[in-house]
Image 1 (spheres, one colour):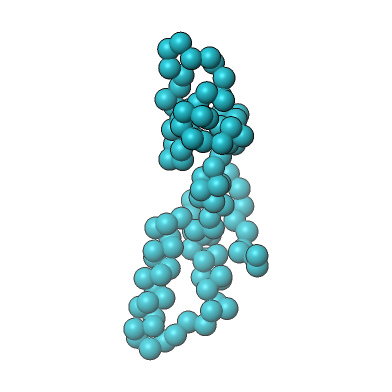
Image 2 (cartoon, helix red, strand yellow):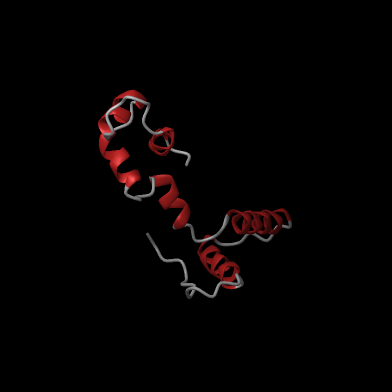
Length: 106
């Protein structure tokens, strides 16, 4: 619950206020449509982006550390090989819910 709309919904209605989202929208200065979306389960843009990441933050850090080490040793890694390195890291994850696809172009 890091975005303003989620925090506004968590505060709820004050005693004596009408039970409508418009009241919270005006009080917390949050768009009414955003409040409605959060109340019905739509994630924020940041939450959606976190769910679509190919590598987890520790995996990204490990890849970054490896690339820096290779660069410091004088063995520069070509950019075209980075997606295959990311795929190898993601493949070693112990997930049973879905198959890991290689990263594709945006």
